[in-house]
Every structure is written in structure tokens, then in C-alpha cells.
Length: 580
Image 1: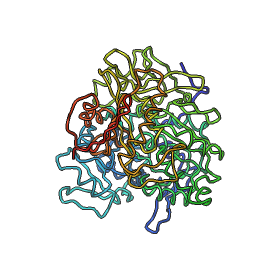
Image 2 (image 1 turned 135 degrees about the vertical axis):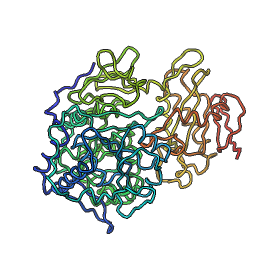
Image 3 (image 1 turned 45 degrees about the vertical axis):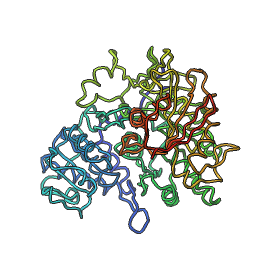
Image 4 (image 1 turned 30 degrees about the vertical axis):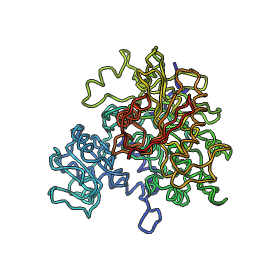
């Protein structure tokens, strides 16, 4: 069992008290910045931010919003979303963030499931993806220029922030810490998203725990793109900035354009940065342009970088660490608000090790290897999901995470998701994530890899290349000595054969090695449900969508639509095929 080395500090009772405290302490300091039409960052002070939140609360209360009511917010990150979400929480309500780019079927499914009777949307794109059939009593839009005749009661956000007549609104400082304030849907990597019910205490205990560990304060600057409908961005990163009084600058490309991120980095000079490995790699690649570019990225004020969703490659991590910039990793789930562990930058990194518990959190390993968690950060339950709730907690109150791991000298080591482990026909258990990681690390042309083989004699792999890199290879960037940059699927297939053999060699058990692989020239996407809104692969959906390719790897002859290159590792046989 792992316990935190230090107790958790004082936990603020609720979000309203946090906002009142910060308005008094940081009144003239900038809380939020975004790019204006001239291409420069402009911000709002804590004082004005606080006034807007008070006005929103008063407007909502006059419209009938009361304690326990739910506001679904269907939007990208923006100032209006932030002010509205905090106003809902600080008045005793429940915010329900919905991924801005969900299509109508998914968006309406989640809004309807949440039982939210209040809804705010960013603009026309979101309005196009909802219908008048939704059971919504009040509808707001952030873009004041948007009108939709289907929704005669549509109210512009500008009306919400106007001061209302009557008594001044007072943020509800008497909200009990165990009051639910956020309903957040999981990313759904293994199936239908679940609605996680989180309390004021869940969210704020996290900040009380990590303040001494990360050392974030009011002088820090965040450059941020991680979406607020997801726990890493919407709880861990966002509240790390808000709680400490740091300045949060919204990255204008929402993490999509490395050149835009770099230009924004030049303007903001962030002191901390939270991201996923893919973005770090893109930014580092841009530093090759000049010494000035390198100085901008590795600026002297950068205190640390934080990576989640996947570990930063050792090669890239070393680039930051040799310049004195610590790389911090963590682990957690939406159900744990989300952070449970943090790595110690002073210790040598070890593959899969995600650190020790933060203050207040305890971790233990069950007999079947599942990681279990206890602490003030653990959710209440799933909303309207009796089946999931029935077994999610142990009889003695520990949360079953569904992750498999082990305890090491340097902390918790992740092994796999429990439901990803499968059995071969001979009864041997295979942990597919070990080989998937090895394949992805061997070749930076591999965007995603899925190892499958439940009930079969041996595992096989489906591999999805980075199509953009094939179309425009960078001959200056190679993952290791002797690698060349392929330009076609056939070239990648011939090149990748050797990498797959080396990846196989990294796996100790012979039965767990793949005997064949299909490189499929297709892209995983949100629309096909093969990627989650947080851009994680959804393995079950990938296996289902590309089942024909799996059948072919096991000897059948099933027509497929995608261009594919098949590698038979034991016979050294390769086959390029296209049935289009």
C-alpha cells in the first residue's frame, strides 16, 4: 500500500470561498487572457471577473436557477464558459461541460442523460447540433450575433453579465464541501461515457494537496489549450491556475497548430505548461529553426512541464531536463478529480512509473493487480448508472480504478487497463499495452497501434500511420540512427518490419509477441468513435471497425475498403494490398 508522505493541507470548503478569497487577494491581477483581433493577448482582472460572476449568479437566480440545478455547457474553452461554470458552482448548482464538437446524436444523448434543464452553447455550430426536442427550459448563447428562429427564447450571454435590479448577489459561501458541483463525462476509451459526479471537496482537495508539490503561485503564467470538458484540462490544469492566482492564457489554436502554439508561447512566455507528448514533440521540432526559437521554448522562466495521457519519450524528456526544466508526470482518472500521483523530478525516470500519491490519497493493489484508491478526491458515484455503481467501490470503500499496476520503490507503476488484458486460446494472458507502447516508441510514423488476439493462438497488431508525415516527410528528424523517412505505405511497411521485430524482442514472453500486423492507411477519428474527445484511442471501437483486417490476419479472406500493407513477421513475408 502507498500513502502520501505528507498530510493534505487545509481544504477550502467550496468554490464560492475560493473566488471571494482570490478577488480580495488578486483584484487587479489578470486572471484570464485570450488573443484579440489584432493578434495580441488581452485579459480580464480578478476584480472584473468576480463582478461578472456575481452578475451571472444574480441573473440566473432571477430566471429561476436554484441550488442543485444543472447547467450543461456545450462550448469550446472561452471566457464566457469559464465565468458561467464558476457562477453555477458558486451558487450551489452543477456544471455539465459537453465537448464542443460532438455531433447531434452524442451531444443530445449526454445533455438528455444529465437531466440538465439549463443549456449554454458557444455559437451557431453547437446550435446546429441540438434540436427543439431537448427538454431544456432556458437556453443561452455566448456569441451575441447568433440568432436561431427554432429557439425563440434564446438569450445572449451579454444579458447574463448585466447588473440586475434588486439586491446584490452573494456567492454562497455556506455550500457544504460534499455538495456536487460538476458532472463530467469520461472520455469513453472503453465504451459509453459515464457521468462522474464531483463535489467542491473533490476538486479543491486536489489543489490543497499539490500546492506544496508543484509550487504554482500568482506570478505564474499558463498557456493552455486542454479542453475543459475533460478532467486533465478542466479540473487539474484550470483549477491549478485559478486556485493559485496564476494567469491563464488561452492558446488560440486550441492545441491544433504547432506554429500558432509557438507564436503564442513567444508572447506569453509560460512558466508552466500542461500538455500531451505529441504537442511537446511538435514544439521541439520547431526549435531546430534557430537558436532564437530554442531560447523561446526553453525560456528561463519555465519552471516545469507536465505531461499526461502518455509518458514523454526519454529522448524528448532529456532535452528539457538537460536544460534544467523538470518534467512532471502524473496519473489519475476523471473519477479521482483527476490526479492521484505525481512523479518526483529528482528521481530517474522509469518506464510506466507515475510517482507517489499526492497528500491525502492512498493507493493499494488488489489480488488481481487492480489499482484501488481512497482519498478526498474520489467521486461520489456515477449519475444514473446503477450497473456501474454496483461494483465500483469495494466493501471497505476503496475506488476500483480498472487500471492494473504494481508498487515499486519510486512509486506506482502502470501496467494496463484491466479490461484490455486478454487470454489466448491456450489460456496465457497477454498485456497488449506493453507491445503497443513499444511499437509506437520505435517509429514516430506510427500514430496508433492496437494489439489484439482474444481467444486466438497468437496476438496480431493493427497499425495506423501518421498520414501527414507520409505525405510530407521530414528528412532531418528520425527516431534513431539508420532510420529513413518513408513516403508511401509500401516504403513504411518495408521499413517497419524491422521495427516490429525489435518491438517483439522487448517483450519477454514468447506467446505475447505478434506474428503479423496490418498497416492500415486510414485515420482514427471522433466521427468514427475510434478516438475519444481527448484524442485517446478507443480500442474496443477500433477492433470492431477494423474487424475484417483482424480476420484476414488470422487467415481468412475478407474484402476491406482501406489500403493495407500486411507484415508476416515469422516468415518475413510482406504483402501490399488495396481493394479500393
